[in-house]
Length: 451
Image (tube, rainbow, N blue to C red; front, side):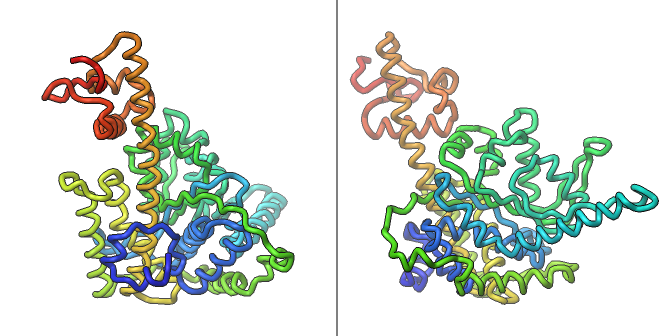
């Protein structure tokens, strides 16, 4: 993202594909910290920026609600962040920079909790009275039910599941077992969307969570996400559509001087300024009783309207809009962009969302949508090859006609979803490798097959 793009009109911004992560859309203190983390750990700006945005939301959601066009009381400013990046390339150390103060405070709270537990256990009236509950608010690995139970008892009000090992979430027990997957996806969605979950499972398994806030900050390898996108429940339930997304390639090797290599993030002034800001914000958190709503001012509201109209047009099926293939992701962004705007405004010390803040939020949201579109389109492009190879193999076995509807039952496993089948067929038709045998478009044949 260049300064020119940030200075451009909103119409220019919306008409262009955003390929560079818009770090200049962040408040200056945060943007400087993102730049330095990316420099020290030699990662793309999006890898650092994504996790900083998640940690910002974790801190902001203690204090504020985002504006909403649906509810007078606003909506949580909680965010779900997903970054695809290879293992061992620097994503975890970026999280360490972004969450340094948060982690220190959480560790101190847990140490105090352990002391309280020891005192409770050694009390002369052993185990009498109320047992202290863990204030832990940062998780790397958990089950959904364990998370619910903890949140229902914990005195904390803000939580984040932050990990560079995305398999802890996506390949964990809760989201892999067929009997728990649907419930777990709904639970995580409710936590992000509303911060309120009620489970009535009976006995100690029941839990009630109200007015708490929950973020996801997940980095994961490409192979895990591709598997999820082939899972009909993950795709159709809408869980993935809630994530702000980035899938950058690792940086190519660039030599560093010895003097550059001697520089360390813990001594960097820009990172220290960011950490001091985090301390100042979190020092006040214990006195917060009611979250304030950062409303849009009139200019920001007009800009948000323009964005909404852009998304409606871009997801219109009849006019083949730009985001038709990712319509659930794009439509979800109409309200989620307000969450990003609220987080940015909070870190800028503003008491409302103004025009510039809304524009910056749109830049970040549009980058995510463009990344989703690129990633999912790349995945779809290979589907036509899968289908064509299958059709050719069947032809060599004597089958020359293929009923479109039956491909969902007997076709390659990757194609057994209506949208993927249709996409693969569309591409093969465009390449003139197949054709319809009849006008009802129920039967396809290879282009060189006799009718």
